[in-house]
Each structure stands twice: as C-alpha cells, then as structure tokens.
Amino acid sequence: MNPTQLTALPPLSLYVHIPWCLQKCPYCDFNSHTIKTTLDEDAYVQALLTDLQHELPHFWGRGIETIFIGGGTPSVFSVSAIDRLLSGIRALVKLNPEAEITLEANPGTFDHDKFQGFRSAGINRLSIGVQSFDDRKLAALGRIHSADEARTAIEKACRIFERVNIDLMYALPQQNAADALADVQAALSFGVQHISAYQLTLEPNTPFGHTPPKGLPEDDTAQDIEDTVHSALQHAGFERYETSAFARTPESRARHNLNYWQFGDYIGIGAGAHGKISHHDRIERTVRKRHPEAYLAAMQGNVQAAIDHKTVAPNDLPFEFMMNALRLTGGVPAALFAERTGISLAQIEPVLAKARQKGLLDHAPNVLRPTELGRRFLNDLLELFLDVPVGLRGREIRIIPSNSR
Image 1 (cartoon, one colour):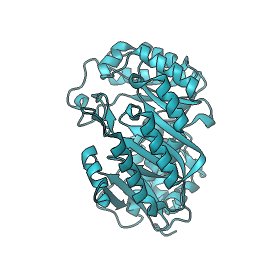
Image 2 (cartoon, rainbow, N blue to C red):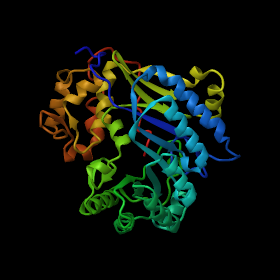
Image 3 (cartoon, rainbow, N blue to C red):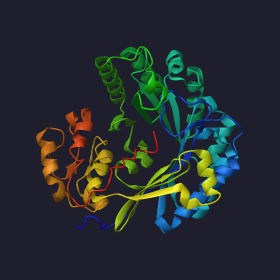
C-alpha cells in the first residue's frame, strides 16, 4: 500500500476549546487563562463558528460523531453562549443525532439551573474536574472548590445528565495510599459510570514544574498509590480500558476520547486547539494561534493566519498511531494500522517483532495490544516506533496529545 493513500476515512469528531478559568491551577499546562475582565462571549462564539466554517472544505460531507467542549473551564460560559455555539455547529455540519456532546465543568462553577440549561442546549455528558475529595489536597493543588462543593455538584449533575465523568488525581502532596483510596471510594459512592484517574505530573513551564510542591510521594509510594487506585476501581466493576480511563460498561466509555486513541480524525477549533484531518492522499495536523486575543483578532480578519497546517510525514505515522492506540489496554485490531495510516503492517514488522521479543507487545497476530509490562513501560514501547523507514522523514515529529482530559 502506498504510504500516502488511505482507502477509507476514519470517524470524525469536533473539539472546541474555551481557554478561560476562574483561576489557573499550578500544575496545568493546558492553554488556559485566568479571567481578568468581563468575557465577550458573543465575540468568542462567533470566532469559533467562523473557525469551523473556514474548516468546512477540509471535511465536506463528513458527519460529526462526537463533540467535546474543553478548556480551561467551559462551564464559566453562560447557557445562552453554549446554546448559540451548539446551534451554530448544527447549522454548519452534519451532526449525528446520537452524537456524544461533552462539556468540562469545575465544581466551583456549578449551579443547578445553569447546568439544566446546558442539558437543554444539547450537552449530554458532563466531565467534572474534582481531583480530590480532601480539602487539604485541593488547597495544595490550587483548586477553587471545596470537597463539599464537589459532592453537591456531582449529586446534582447525576440528576440532570445520564452520563457523568469524575476526574481524579493521585500521587498528590502529602498523599498516601489510604488517602487515595478514600477519594476513589467517594467517587464510587455517586454511582457514576466513568472515572478518569491521573497521576499528578510536574509539567515544564508550570509553577509546579518550576517549584515542585513539598511532600510529593517518592516513586515507590506513588506506584503503591497507583496500584491501590486501579485495584479499587477494578474491584468495583470498572474496566481500565485506557491508561487513565475506567468505565463500568463498554457503553459508558468516552466515545470522543476513543476516537482519539483509535487514530480517528478531529477538527479542533478555538484558541490553541489541535486537529487531525485525513485526506485520501495525506494526513494533516492543524493548530490554532494559542493566545485568545491573537486568535480572536485573526478570526475577525485574516482567518488563515490563525491556523497552521502540517502534513504528517510517512515516517512519523507509526509513532503517532501507536502513541494513541497503545494507550488502550485492549489495543486495536491490527488491520486498523493500515486503514488509518495507509502503511502496510509488513513495513513495520521488524519493530513489532522487537517489541514482542522485549515482552512489551502481545504476540497475537490480529491485534496490536501492549502487555502488562508494556503498559507499565509505555514510553519504552513507543520509542521503538520513533524511526521506522517507511518514506521520506519530516523535519520533526509533532506529537499532539488528546484535547481532552
């Protein structure tokens, strides 16, 4: 198969970035900005719709399967703004009537009537950034909400939305395994069907990256905490279907995120948003201007100046595909590699053989799936795919993480 020829185009999602928060968390490296003045919601919603309209020729005729509104804290926007946004999207694209439409929310911005309004506007899945149910841990993380506010928000959200995700973070300052277990048990008590559990990481160019908080667990303790969190969720009937994602049933998995991990396509609109669009002869990555003011100015003038398009070089595709697919604990069908990259599996067989020899990749020929060792040492597994000679190499590998958490 020619490395630049795709026989079929993958499912398509839409990511919408709203970059404002009431307060920037010291561990966060997402493109988010503290609200300092009154937000011009109308201007930003219009910019998002202008952005989407400009993208139409790149995916004309294709349906949108999922929408994820992330940030930042999108729930700081008013109901009317989210309603205008979703109405405008429906007017521009072919949206699947059964589309999963997710909104990220902070417990500190929760209001029952407001969130009922979000549901009426079309949001059918809410992702709540709780991180911990311990007030001391929340303070250490710089969160604006309390544990009681988190509990209230979840209780009310579960009455409004059929699908609710709780984000938890572990290996926090001064945390031990018992503390982390208490957070998991608190999350489970609400009966939600999906929980995301992440280890706190110290990202460069963040306050925590410059000055790590005191009392971070040592590596062995952090591993014990992770094992405790994972075991508790699995014991409660949750399947760990992705590195940090747990679902009670296959139906409750995050469809939007699954499309990322299966190397599907997604349009990314909004300040700093990333996208991936497949064409029959190439795969392109897009990225928008990062700062909201620069993004808004471009969308009100020279739209094209706000968007950088880059064709992914064939040699970069094996790594990009595996970086996503191997996060799934069940892996993906082996045939999906050729279908989504245009590269035959035979061209990377020597690397696959090496990964299997190291015990990092399952030996089953019809699936690309990490072993337990491969999941634990995922970076080592992925590094094997960094330099696979399947075509002319690009100047750089651009690694685009999920737009969602």
